[in-house]
Amino acid sequence: MRIRIEKAQCTGNARCNAVAEDLYPLDDEGYIATEGFEVPPGQEDLARRGARACPERIIFVIEDEETA
Image (cartoon, rainbow, N blue to C red; front, side):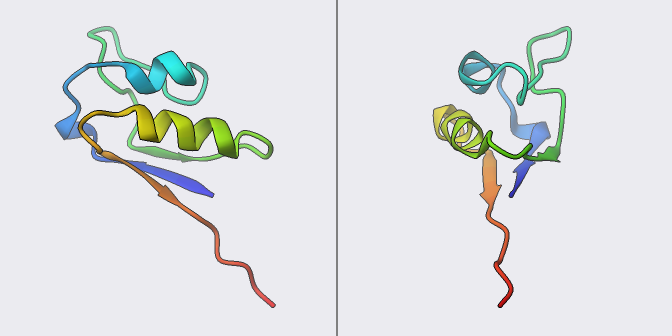
């Protein structure tokens, strides 16, 4: 699972960070500090909750496709 963030559209609400501080770090001005990341195993639900918390909807969850 990956997270993609449209960083340039961040308005600094920091709700993602409030939900999952370690996954959604902020810069010194309070805006998201990353354009995306691989979600560590076991933190998928937390990553999804952080993405849903964003009022601008600029955080996208990219689920891994399972291979058979």
